[in-house]
Amino acid sequence: MQESFYTIDPKWIPILVIYAVVMAVSLVVFRIWYKRYKSIPDKQVTAKLKKTSDYFGMGETNDGMPSSYTYSIAKYEYYLNENRYTIKLKCQGSVSDEVVLYYKKGRRDVRLEKKFTLPIVYKYLLLLYFVIGIALITVGASQCLGYQIL
Image (tube, rainbow, N blue to C red):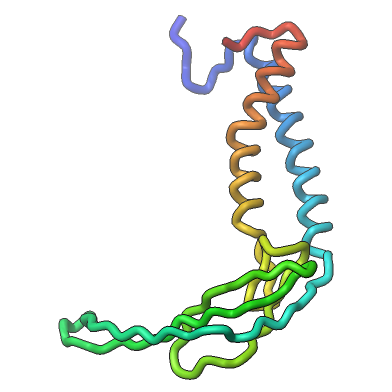
């Protein structure tokens, strides 16, 4: 009998059910956590200018014509929980003496706009969990229930 791509070996059905349950529970937990994290009110902190550095560069436009490019790197200082932190911003034109930074929980999610974005560390951890963690949980749960995968 020739197996088709669309046929499933019956021994894999319990493992697929375990995987689907683990994925569904993980998605529900993620959705609840994401809504709670997003609903935390934004806090703000004012960062004061400490140092600027001017940069000049030569480049090319898309037409092949040379153009000069100038910008400034501004180093700002701010305090969270009585700890000193710095942030560098690339500015064109004038550099303001103070900028307002927004955050929810701490230094990891400091941003310039009030628009919400998930911090990059959390994005990587979620990616790691959904790619590797769910697979490992599925293998462990399947072996505990007596289904061999490997």
